[in-house]
Image (cartoon, rainbow, N blue to C red; front, side):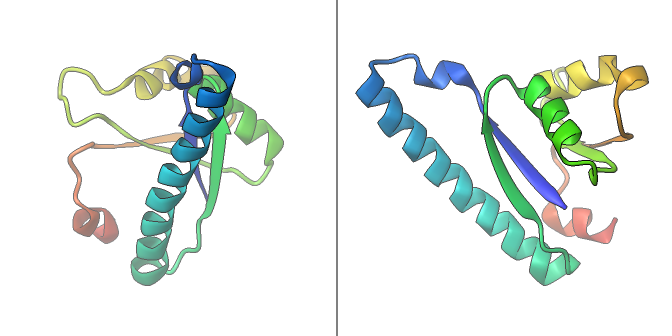
Length: 119
């Protein structure tokens, strides 16, 4: 199981030195968050997820990752908690359902970890 985080390129539209520091800080922050999630998955779900961090536009990165790793069999996305806007990645991938390389599962953004663990 992979857990993918994508850092959007617009976060680094600064001078080269500043952009490198921001890139490093973003990776560290995401790594820490992914490790918390991975620890929870190992302890509660008995799954050891592989964290993957990419930089770029989210949808192309998700699709690229699925092409590079032939073992990916399902995309699992969480929506935004905003009931009127599920989020740009969910919206974009939903529009491509017919051409996605694997099935797409979408979970409500407000789903608690406890409830997620019961699924």
